Length: 264
Length: 257
Image 1 (spheres, rainbow over the protein chains, first blue to last red):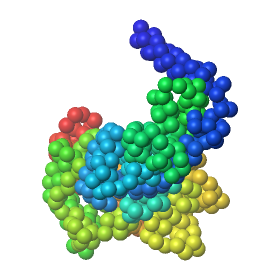
Image 2 (cartoon, rainbow over the protein chains, first blue to last red):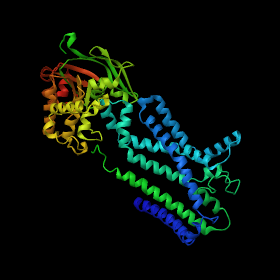
Image 3 (tube, chains in turn brown, blue):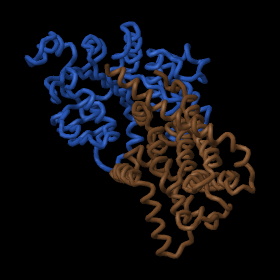
Image 4 (cartoon, rainbow over the protein chains, first blue to last red):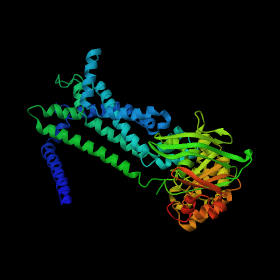
């Protein structure tokens, strides 16, 4: 009986997703040519460029800070109780809703007179995704690493040597997968960018240097307008495919790790 | 334990207690280990054998929930205090675990890991040290042409040999063996015992083991532990044949003490 219940739940999930994507395909594909016209206001060329712009700006700081924070949190011997506090702090920060962080940054922008911009939104997305990157990197570094850490330490390896020469190279594929997963979060983000580019205030392209919002915001904005559902469905389909490709790459990277070199 | 001249004493453990959170694993243990002797720690699971071994090279530092109290002196120098160079300590007090974990690299890199971690970069010196260590671990003939192969491909017994070789490569004075044959079949276990036996004259060895026959074969001194305390210690033949404490006698006879 429980097995049938689980299977039924899985079935409901699959049918729901297939129905949504099916609707997107049916509505969006006929508009596919139109949305790739750079002069069409419903087009996705500028949103695509804006998406790449945001991802390129947001990803490196998130990756660097995330990996470094994970290294610190991975080994309590390096920073003692600080590392434990850091883990708890990261968990806490990671649990704050992204829209709240965006709103707080918006208030700061207003206080300090900063201009709303896509670049600022990219910075916000970077900060928002740092805890996720840290958690994923921490998982990559410490995955089945207890015995290795013990063996290397018993041979006189310092904590830093252990991390740099043993744990990091070993976690390389998992870290790449983590990076791709964070990229999917950045590409799929809408709320934070919408707030921090002023998209909810001014329905114009003024806040973005590329003359458009990233794809996720584009879908959001176009979706709230009364017409043009077909073109928006095509954009949503494109966004979904992009996310799936990134997810697929992440899974591929994680699976290429295969049998760990230290073996059984 | 028989009296020994002070100069022969390698390790002095005094009032050593270890806590895992609120659980006390060692309760004020005191004992000395003479230089270049082999000491076996025997006792039921949870008696404190591994906790004692791990205190001797400060492996407990890896677990922030562990608290260690008391004194351990090696060659007269306190090792539990602050400011001790633990990396150097662990090179001097090597450890071989029950689970022969290979580092994710080649066989040669595994053997040379401790040297590389010391900052030694000269490949010739490292290869020489690796060869010497592998010979002492009885593995050179099998491994001479396989040093660049991944260590993951080795069998369990070969791995344990490599673990011994890489511990030897940094030339430790003291070697700790935490049930080194626990995961091996009897023939493989005897091969490892043979290697340990050959190391006895050059190193101070401590072996925590659940195999009483192994303790009887290898150890000069045997320490019987129960509930985090040393119940009895003494020359191995004497302890096995004429235990002074009824609990030791019961344990050796396979009865619940």
